[in-house]
Amino acid sequence: MKLMASEVATVTDGRLAGPDVALTGVSIDSRTIAAGEMFVALMAERNGNVFIPDALRAGAVAYMTAQPNLDAALTTVTLSDAAPTDAVLPVRSTAIIVADTAAALAKLGSHARSRFLGPVVGITGSVGKTSVKDMAAAVIGTQRPTHASLRSFNNELGVPLTLINTPDTAEVVVVEMGARGKGHIAELCSQARPTVGVVTAVGAAHIELFGSIKAVAEAKGEMVECLSEDGVAVLNADQPLVAAMAARTSAQVLTFGGTAGDVRASGVRLDEALRPSFLLETPSGRAEVRLLACGEHMVQNALAAAAIGLAVGVDIQAIAFGLAQAQLSPWRMEVAELSSGALLINDAYNANPLSMEAALRALGHLQRGRKVAVLGLMAELGERSVSDHAAIAALARELHIEVIAVGTSHYGIAPVSDPEAAVAAVGDLDSNTAVLVKGSRAVGLEQVASGLDGLS
Image 1 (tube, helix red, strand yellow):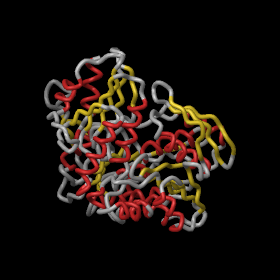
Image 2 (cartoon, one colour; image 1 turned 90 degrees about the horizontal axis):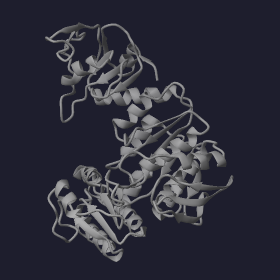
Image 3 (cartoon, helix red, strand yellow; image 1 turned 180 degrees about the vertical axis):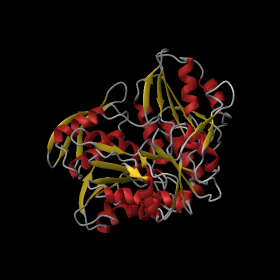
Image 4 (spheres, one colour; image 1 turned 60 degrees about the horizontal axis):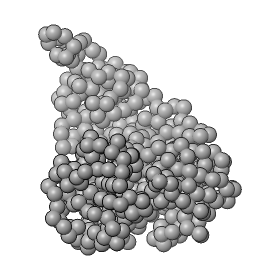
C-alpha cells in the first residue's frame, strides 16, 4: 500500500523531518528491508534506533523513531563494506518522530485498513491458525488477488505490518491473529476489522498466561464478537467451546468439521507420505481434494480454509484446486524422505498438547519399523505442564513411538541436553526409520531436523 511520509506523520500524530517521500512499505527489520520502505525503530529487547543506518544503507527512504534527539535528517551513512576505505554516501533521509513507535505502528495499521475496501479475513485459534491462513490464501488466490500475513506475523506488530504492506492490487486480505491474554484479539480486531472471523480450535496453548481453557475460549471468541451483522463467523463444529461462540455474534455462522459441520470431509485417506485425500462436502457442492500438507489433522485446517473460501465467494472447484496447491509456512509438518531412506517429519515451529497429539498420531500412522519422536518442552502450560507432558509420553508408548526428550524431564525419561545431542541419540537412519521433530519455538528443534538431514 503506497503511503506518503506526510500521511504517516499525520496519522501517527508524529512530526515529519526531511523531504516528503513516497513509501512502498514498512519494515521493523533492517536485515530484510527493501528499497523504498520505511524502517520503524522499535524499543524492545534492543534499541531499534541503532539499526537506522543499516536500514538506510539497505535502501530505506525514511525511518520512524521515538528518540527526538536523533538527527532528524541523517545526511551521511558509513559504507565501510562498499569501499576500500571508509566512505560516506550522501543521502536525504526522512524521519518521522513519534511518541511511541509501537503505538504509531498500530495507528498506521488501522489507517491502512480504512483505505482497504475488500473483505478481510481474521483467523485465530489455539492450533492451526497459520496453516489455515496459508490454505485460505491459496484458496482465495485462485480467483482474487490475495494478501496474507507472513509466516506467523500474528501479534501487535505482525497484524499492522500485514495491513500496511497490503499491495494496492489486493482484493482480499487474510490476517492471522494470536493472543496471550484477554483483550488481545479484540485489540487486533479493532485494527483489522475483519468481515470474516475464524476460530480454528481452543486448547491449552499459553494456558499459563490465560489460567484456564475457559479463559482461552473467552479470549478467542473476541474474534466473532467484533463482526457486524453482514459478516461471517467460521467456527469449528467439532469443538463445543468453539461451536458455542455462535451465540456471541450477530454475524452469519458457517461451521466446519465432523458430520454436523456445514463444510465436511468424507472418505479421508493418507498416502505413504501422509498426504490426505478426501471428498469435500459443502452447501455449494462437492469436490475431491488431495492436499500437499501432511497429516490427517490438516484435513480440519483445509475444511476451515474451504469455509473461508465460500464466505468470500470462491466456487467449489476453485477451492479444491487451491487446497491442492497450498504450501504451508516453514517447519509445519514438513515431510521429507532423506537419502538414507528414512522419513523426517519437521514440525518444529511450535508445540502444545493438541498439536503434539496430532503430530504423534501422524507418525504412528507410518508403516516404519522404528518410529522416533524428538520432543522438546511444550511451554507456557503452567500447573498443567507435568500432567500434559506425561499424557503425551503415554500416547507415544501406546503408539509404539520411541521418545528422545530434549532439555526437559517432563516426559518421564532422562533428557539429552541440546539439539546436537538429540541428533546423536537418534543414531543410524535407514528406510525402516521415521523421525518426528517437535517442540515449542524457544527450544529451537529445527536444528535437530537440519542435523538429521545432514546425516542422511
